[in-house]
Amino acid sequence: MLLARGTEHLSPEQLLNLKEHKYSSKGSSVSEKYFQVFWCSLVPYIPKRIAPNTLTLTGLILNTLSVLILLYYSPDLKSNVPSWALVLAAVCIFIYQTLDALDGKHARETNTASPLGELFDHGCDAVASIFVPLCLCVTVGIGTHPVIVFIQFFTFLAMFYLAHWQCYITGYLEFGKIDVTEGQIGVMGTLLFTAIFGVEFWTYRVPLIGMPLKFLPFLVILSAAMVNISHFFTVLSQGGAGKAGTTVAVSLYF
Image (cartoon, rainbow, N blue to C red; front, side):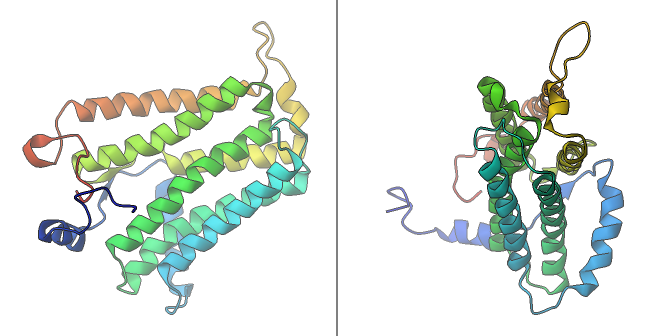
């Protein structure tokens, strides 16, 4: 039985919460406002008969296939990968990013937006939050340092978890000036750069300190994570939107 004892069915209050739930977000990253123009221009070209979840799933499938190709050539996260595979991965991330932005717009356009659709969307995002750092690890060949690989994966997953915990606290999903869109752009840029100059580029060492360049993306990600985590704890200290100002997600259904 998947549900814990005592949660075999939903209470009337939980059903009402599910029915009345609406997606809410706040803020916009530096590049998102420009991408929004591009995304909005594509909405009229999406056939009405296509379900929004189909867009979400298609993007995730393409992302998955590109990652599997990268892992085929570099299962140890440190082997050379053909340039075409790196370019394909960058294209698939771009398509995933685009479809992930379009599914909600298409749902509102066709009046099919629902809490279930949002759950499916964020579920796919949770899976993609593993694939994106995996692409980055393969690209720079960071498999030579397993501890760095672990920290990078942990950082990506922690960022995703904390963003949604903060959403529970405040009642809306907040986007910073440097957020997921910029992260995806960074990974796509790294993939294309490596396709041109080769994985060997990341083995060069910075003069004086002797640090391999492959550590650079990791340090950038870690720095951004520290800023966002600091903001999260600031929000946490102000109390939550739950009953009695709770910040703990104790209920399965809000």
